Length: 118
Image (tube, rainbow, N blue to C red):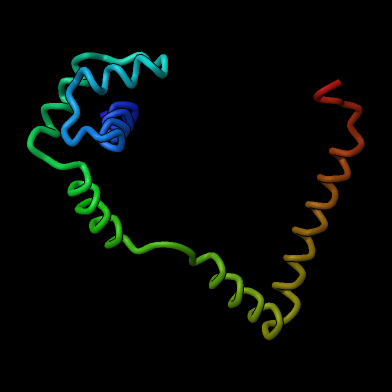
């Protein structure tokens, strides 16, 4: 189901409609100049019949929280740095080559006589 339908439905809920109708959602979509399919809109209203949006959000939030969340990027950097300091030159040499290659690429970009906006 398209997010535009759900977004418009939730906008109607925020606007005070506890159970928005197809006409309520249609009015919001049309006000934004958004094209829609009546069949999809009817399907949304059918699936939401008898349900409260805030209850569905709370239920979905609980499922989403079970997935865990966040980070992990900072933890990987510490072992890599520790390995280079204690492990020797192989890891340090590889890092230096990557850095050197990156600097060369940046220099090549600066040498171009290309102006995107000129």
